[in-house]
Image (tube, rainbow, N blue to C red):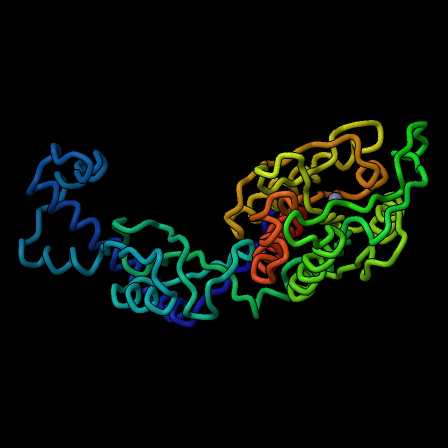
Length: 364
Ligand SMILES: [Zn+2]
């Protein structure tokens, strides 16, 4: 479920106090206005015409003078101005000038473009053009300020990040899942850059460290399966780190390789259903969708979509929701260079962090 925090502005409170007084006046005025419209335009006025109930009332009461009606019409019903896309400060001015109260609703699932009143209005309810009685509030949806929302975002959540591979693979077999007859090497060395010659384990540790910093800034507790390249931690042992702390998400960071050097793009893998993964398939698929979407948005890379996998030991041993990001192809000269670029690593980590945070918030 998506959480959102609501706050009412001072202007709203003031306007609300007025609203109760105005409500009675507005109601009387509205009736007069409708009566007048009925007399002037008759019942054929289309969408703006009066409803039958009001038409009946018309017959029972005399119509007021035209000059008096023009004034009351202005005071009673207000056309809501368009404020979507404006800053919160501009929206306050526009709406309060029009005599409309403001309620704000902070959406923590959206990354704020600025802080405080400089944030952009994402949505308004009711929409522009709606005619409503004076004193009624318009609700504005805005992104939560990073400063205000960071402690709230996913606070208390635990994410385990697994930078794939290590400087030396270990081909000793380990079962592909608990109790499995089939086995695979404990951990492999991974691929390396076609042009840069940088190994995958090095690049993915850089990206993972960047991601850790961003998640921690959002209040997430982060554990790493490794913080250096010279380790020997098998895929099942990496999953065990996430299992032992009951991680909300186990995030595995890899880069791809292919014999076709033209192959490019980002994919997010998640556990396909088998005898081990059944309880974690659904949340893992949700996480994969959110992470893939935001990483593609942040990087502009080609999307290779989300891919279920039943053959990965790291998934089969995991008892918590898990995804594996293939951040790009090191066998592609362009993506190889990008993957070693700090700027591109920032974009990758930024996209991953916002997808992960969206998942953590959605699951709570
Ligand atoms: Zn890999």
